[in-house]
Length: 170
Image 1: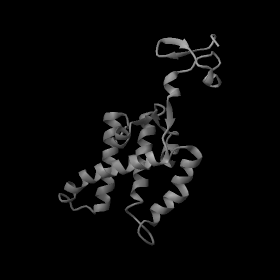
Image 2: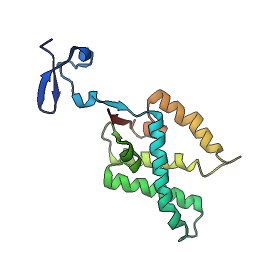
Image 3: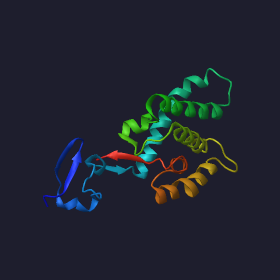
């Protein structure tokens, strides 16, 4: 159909019929958003593993320089690491950079700060326990993180801090 067009930056070009359902009321679609998808659960997990690796690289030398309990120091390093990326890279951490993901929407620094605090609390469940090692982590994963990822397509800390959703260009 010749009447349907879409925008790519400042260009307007004919639009293939296979995707006509996704056009807005004006008959236009931002092609860039068509080529994005929400991150999968394993990409969220892998980003956290990558971040934890870099936090460990920072933590190890610092642990020899202070008398703080190692768990407290590790949580502080994790928080500082994420705060660094909030200030200098709009909350796009090394895990996101390596995986080539980014946030779907721009959020306020307040939303990002809430995200970092909740992300750090979630991380700290790896280090502290009540009855046996990793009990808080298992409760966090089974009852909070996994159901939220399934239902809301983002982690609990992402949802509570303004529905922050990670996306990847395809």
